[in-house]
Length: 192
Image (tube, rainbow, N blue to C red; front, side, top):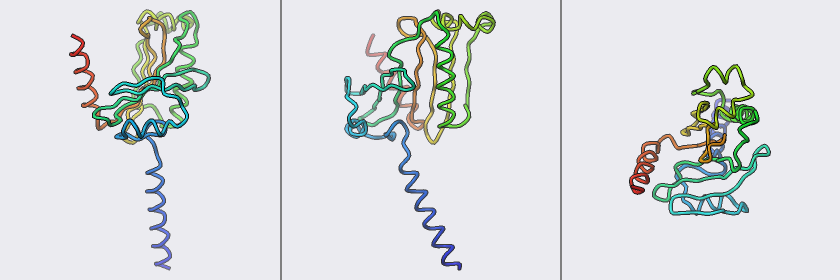
């Protein structure tokens, strides 16, 4: 009886280890993968462009087109994002509704939100129909953060380069956060 129980425990542990190895950090990738491994993981999804430190693909989620961005340091995957291709119209309420739809989808995958950062002045709380306009002028921004199995996930509603409301979801390896920040700072310095 004890041997049967021990055998069942070993099989259970091995299955859970094998199952854990099947989990991904972003899409079908794991932090630390090479650029070639990420390209292979995307399969038939056509690559839009790439540079030494980035890869771009496209994806449609819940009817919204996104750029899929993979970021590398020393040819190792450290972060990735979904970046909305076409910004919201600042005169509609769609940006707020869509943010909360994606928030629910992420909660289903990663559990309860760990952090919420909301910048919503009283005017926009009272006049929710103008909230997307508030995003486009920089008065309203919303960030929800999940921390899950070595990954930090940020769902962010803010204005894009054209000052229109835009949704993005950013995933980053927690162990590489310092390297990511340092790499971004170095890129900015090179622009000067």
